[in-house]
Amino acid sequence: MISIFKTSVEKTRDSRKIKNELNEKMPEARIVFDLEDCDRIFKIESAEVSIEVLEETFSRMGHELEILKK
Image (tube, rainbow, N blue to C red; front, side):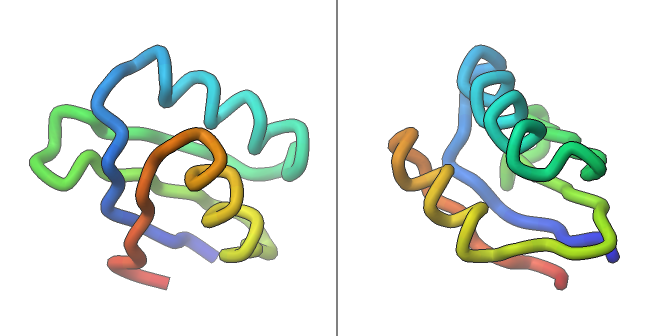
């Protein structure tokens, strides 16, 4: 399953921190950020995606996350 989100992440440093933390929780997931896009896209591909884990991780790191495609 591929899920796509709009985010408030602006800095590559922040995207790396989020990606590293999510890789620990979901090691099988393929995670991509596109910070050049106007919506600062976050895309995750995994057999199972926990929206709650994503929202909690982004929120704890001071960022917003909005589902565009699930």
